[in-house]
Image 1 (spheres, rainbow, N blue to C red):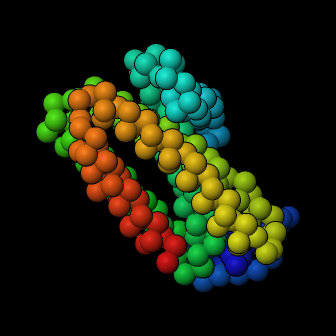
Image 2 (tube, rainbow, N blue to C red; image 1 turned 30 degrees about the vertical axis):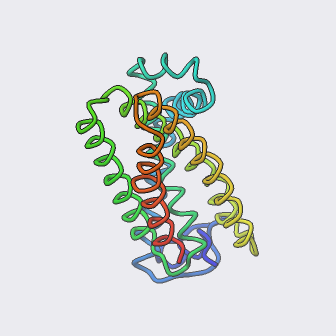
Length: 225
C-alpha cells in the first residue's frame, strides 16, 4: 500500500510530520507529489468556486426545480466544471494508492481520455439529433455527478496521507458506493431527458448502454484490473 509518506520519501525530498516515513521509486514519487501539491494549491485558490460548484452540482442532480436556474446561470455552470476538474486529481490519487501498479499519471491519463471521449459523444449526439439544449443539460448533469463522485475521494487521500494501514478493502467499497450512487442518478436524469426530447424507449436504453455504461465499464476495468 502506498501512502503519501511513501511517495514523498521516494521522491528524495525531505518532509516532516505525517508525510515522511517510507519510500517509492524516485521519479514516480516526485511526479505524484508535485501533481498533488498543484491540485491542493488550485483547491485553495478556487475554494469559493469549488463550494459553489458542489452546491450547484447537488442541486442539479437532486432538484429538478432548481436545475433550470443553474443551467441558465453561466457562473454556476463554470463553477460545476471547476469543482469537477480539480478533485479529479484526488480521485485519481485515491485509485493510484489502492492499485499500486498504477502510477498517478497513468490513472489521470485514462480519466482524461474517458472524459474527452464522452464529451465528443455528447456533442456529436447533440449535433446529430438536433437536441442541443437537452444534451447541453446532460453535460452539466454529468459534470455535476462526477464532481460529487470526485470529492468523495478526498477523505481517502487524507487517510493515506496520515499513513492509515489496512484500508484497501474499505477504499474499494467506499469509492464504489459513491460512484454507483451518483452515476445511477445521472443515468436516471439522462434517461428522463432523452424521453422528454422525443427519443423512443428502445433508442434511449440503447444510448445509455452503448455510449454511457459501456465506456464507463471499460474505464473502470482499465483503472482497477
